[in-house]
Image (cartoon, rainbow, N blue to C red; front, top):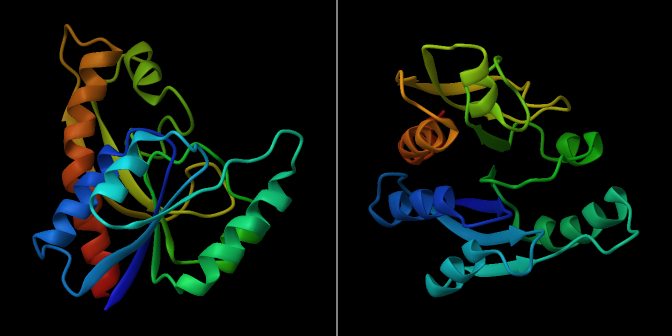
Length: 189
């Protein structure tokens, strides 16, 4: 049985998509063993609790360093022996030490067709650049910002009347299909 840990910071819609796919058997012989968040009040944690999944709310203390915070995370994460860590709206950059400890086992989803528009506000930047196609990318995490090897991408047309909200909503729909597909692909290889 493969073991997934999900990291999130907010509503957890991609976590729900992954959990639903696991429950339906679309990601075979896999279970989500825990959900971590840097936000104690993240709605995604409530959903994980509702599903009976262990949750770990580990906010970074004021004035605390990233290294100290990641040491606390790893003390809880390492005993879980995850096969895969899925960043699903986790809004913190991971240190190179953290990435090295789990190299090849951390996935992220990003709302653009990387390498275009890494980082924040990808949809707004795609609109400002006059893109006619956008989408989402599932990629392995490396030490750079949204720069790791791509697992898969899904395209979404940019419509003439799109604004950031409408484009984001259509990309999010594709994220919910792309992330489980990418996890299945990675775990079966």
